Length: 118
Image (cartoon, rainbow, N blue to C red; front, side, top):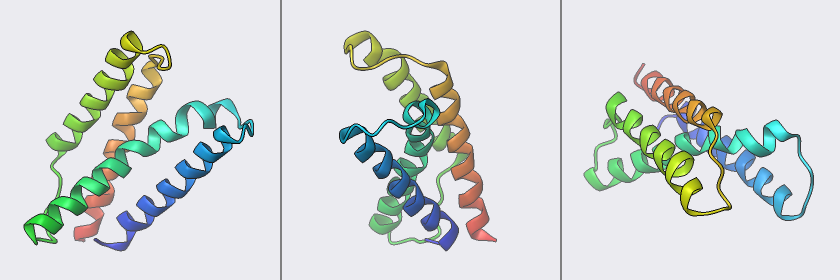
């Protein structure tokens, strides 16, 4: 994988991990960080790992995820985490802003991936 996408992946994992650890050790972060940053980071993390696995299994470093595939992942995350889980588990809450963040970060991934080929 090219550097821009890999750097973004590493950055996302590090930031997400710091937020997670802060929550576990009860360090109070600003609400915008606690409630929204990891929702923005998760889609590119999942897409990067998916692309890495696909490229490895197919032994083709030029494979890309299509816009339709990216939108599908964003839609599934929206349905599962913002509709289904809040109805099934009290730990989860529905938030329309999260849906927007899923799609916004999906588009960021799409453009970073396209930047790789140039």
